[in-house]
Image 1 (cartoon, rainbow, N blue to C red):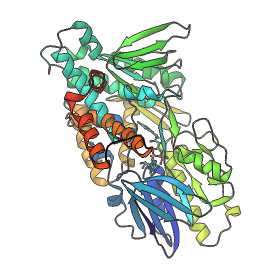
Image 2 (image 1 turned 90 degrees about the vertical axis):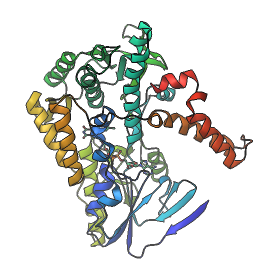
Image 3 (image 1 turned 135 degrees about the horizontal axis):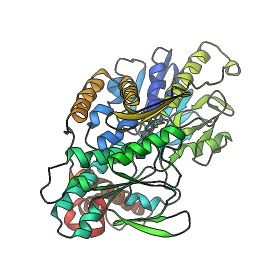
Image 4 (image 1 turned 180 degrees about the vertical axis):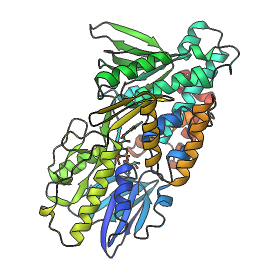
Length: 483
Ligand SMILES: Cc1cc2nc3c(=O)[nH]c(=O)nc-3n(C[C@H](O)[C@H](O)[C@H](O)COP(=O)(O)OP(=O)(O)OC[C@H]3O[C@@H](n4cnc5c(N)ncnc54)[C@H](O)[C@@H]3O)c2cc1C
């Protein structure tokens, strides 16, 4: 284990996270008289709104995840470091991150924390084994493997019950992500995979969209929710509302109705898109600064997005709680730019007490349901159908980072929307099994460091990795879970 210190001569700004908030903050700091260090646990910026298209074979990883250091290559005052931040010391102005065995401590004069949010299973984290969420590239690729794998297994099965289970896809959560994913799984089965199997009819796959709320896209409400529901039903998606998931296992899930009755849905491929929990770094920041924290783990920031007593520390994006602002890309991007501007103003001598409060400019929100159909809400303006889809197409292209990403995405869209084909239909075993293998390795490492492991360091890790990735050794439950 080594500890290194990254020295800097000028004002030092550390940005945590390379998502919408972090990247836009770092870019806005490009022309300031400061040394900027961006620390993130992935090497890429991720355009999360299009993850579902990676999961369903429309886009490639590269289309939505440009390498952060390539994006920032011309920004000479900025260094990009790979590492997972696990400790922030507000008093001493340090951020400590870890990459493999290496620990790095980076000093800061100003800090912008934009570590985003993860999936929340509302206290049922064990659901994740069989109903993964969709927050990262790994999640999307795993999901692609599970979806396509279920069709492949169904083709091999002669048992009608098993076939039905394999061809039932359940998406939990009818917010924008759930709606988009359910719509795309339906289109995949009805258009892309049609006539590609000889034993099964892919078009008869059951796609269930399930939510405890009383409507799909409840944040849009009224006309748009109805429109979304109608379009989904037209695609053959079964919508089940007022239904709470109470159990998830390899073969299906248990659902509780409003009247308290429970029922079961047999399904191999389940996806969770029902809730979010802010990065655990929020708890550290709250504990050290005395800031409040809301139920989703978001830090209650001051009107200038800083922490009480720490005008040099900003928390933005999905990690911040302010005026009930939603967890949207625009909130993070605008927060990042605002925080960078306040740091630049401080460098020019502005007193933090003179800062204008952060004002969010609502540019609207949108969700696509199928090709040529989307719903969008911009202020009081509501658009749906083809017009909504054009708006969706334009906005997403506009905000994709990098010209080459925009071009390759446009080409992949042309292929997917105007023909039955999709460019990214490959799925590997690693995609599907790696998460389970990595979790086992981590578990093993944790028990070893806690003094429970008996094997040597090298041997133990190697043996467990082999056991976890070798299919012949994986339990039937693992194999089923992997879809
Ligand atoms: C599937 C999906 C679809 C979405 N669709 C839309 C949409 O259509 N429209 C919309 O406006 N919003 C959408 N959102 C929400 C939007 O993506 C988020 O609001 C936005 O990404 C928040 O930006 P952020 O910078 O706060 O966090 P993120 O973009 O999540 O970035 C967090 C960054 O922090 C890094 N990180 C996390 N923890 C650590 C750590 N401990 N150490 C170092 N680095 C760390 C991550 O690797 C990442 O780089 C969607 C989100 C998802 C998951």
